[in-house]
Amino acid sequence: MKQRWTIIFSVGAVLMALATPARAALVFESATLGPEGLIAGVTANSSQWLGVRFTLSTPTQVTWLGAHYWMNGTDGFIGVFPIEGGTGFPPDPPALTDALVTAPLPAQSPSSETGVGVDITLPAGDYAVVLGSTSTFSIGGMPVNNPNINTPFYLVKAGSGWINGGLNQARFFVGSSTCGDGLVELPEECEDENQDNTDGCLNTCQDASCGDGFVHSGVEECDEGDQNGIGSCSLACTIVTGQGGGGPGGGAGTGGNGPGGSSAGGAAASGGAGGSSTTGGGTNADQDSGCGCRVTGGQRSSGSSVPWTMALVVVSAALRRRAWMRRRRHHPELCPRR
Ligand SMILES: [Ca+2]
Ligand SMILES: [Ca+2]
Ligand SMILES: [Ca+2]
Image (cartoon, rainbow, N blue to C red; front, side, top):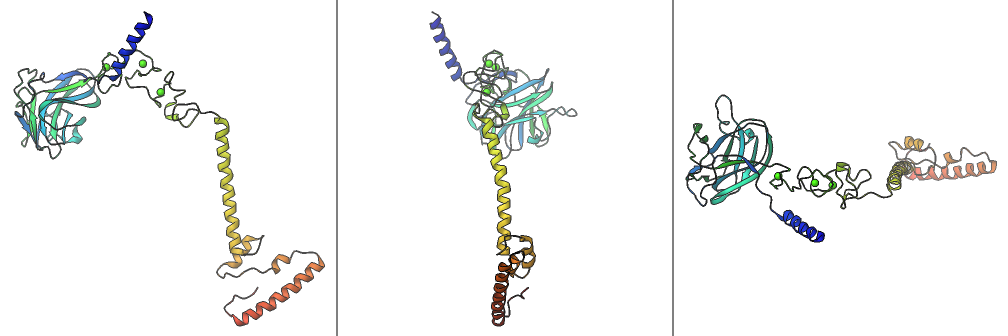
C-alpha cells in the first residue's frame, strides 16, 4: 500500500513538472474577459495610445501585463506608466523611456486575450497600464462590446492629449504571482510549498540549478554560486579533486616560464647584436650602435694569463689585423677597426 502511494505521488509530481505555468493572479482588471474574435472597437496607431488607471494600495510585485486586443503589426507594447500629479494622466506622449516597465505585445487578429511577463515591484500608488506602438503598429485596439465592465477610468491619447473615457469596456489586466501559494504562475518555474532549498525547487519558486548557491541533494556535489570554477567546486557543481597539487603546480609552471622566457629573449637579443661575445653583452650593444661593427676575438683573449696562449693570441691578432687591413683597402666602406 505504501508503495502504491509512492507511485501515485511520483506520477503527480511528473504531471506537475510538465504543467504549463499559469498566468499570474490578477491584482487589477479593467473588465472581465469579453467576446473574442473581434476586429472592431477603439483603435490605436503609432501616434495613439489606449490605457486605464489602476491603484495599488500596497507594494506589489507585477509579473504579468495583458489585454484583450487585436493588432496588425509587430511592435506594439504594453507598459505601466506613472500618473503625473499635476495632470492626473500618464506622460504625454507616453514615451517608452517614461515607462516603469514595458513588454512587447505580439500581433494577433482577430482579438483574443494575451498577457506578457514582466517583473517589477511597484510601490503603492496610482498608475496607468497603456497599450501603444513604437513605430509601425499600423492598427490595433480594443473590442468594446464587453458587457462585463468593472471600472470606468479608461484613457485615450491622440494628438491633443490624454482624455478620460472612450474605451468603453475594453479589458486590461495586471497580474502578480505569489511564490508559495501552490500555483505555478509566470514567471515562477515551480512551486513545492516547502522551505527546502536542497530539492528541485528553490524557495524563490525557481528550478534548482548549478550556480544557484544551494547544493541540490543527490544531484550536485557542491554549489558555491558565482565562485564555482574558482575554488573547490567546478562549474559543473562537482568537487574538484587534487586541487592542492593542481593549482599550485600550474602556478609554479607559469612563474617559471615567465622569467625563463624573458631571460632567453634577452640573451638571444644580446647575442644577435654582439654576434661573438659570451660576456659583456652591454658592451657589444654599445659598440654596435649605429655602426653594425663586429667585436673582434682580441677582446676575448685579453684576460688570459698563460704565456703561450698569449703568444698565440698575439700572433692570431696580428694575422687577422693584416687580413682586415687588406680587406679595408678593397672595401673602404667598412667601419674603422678599433
Ligand atoms: Ca505561485
Ligand atoms: Ca523546495
Ligand atoms: Ca544548485
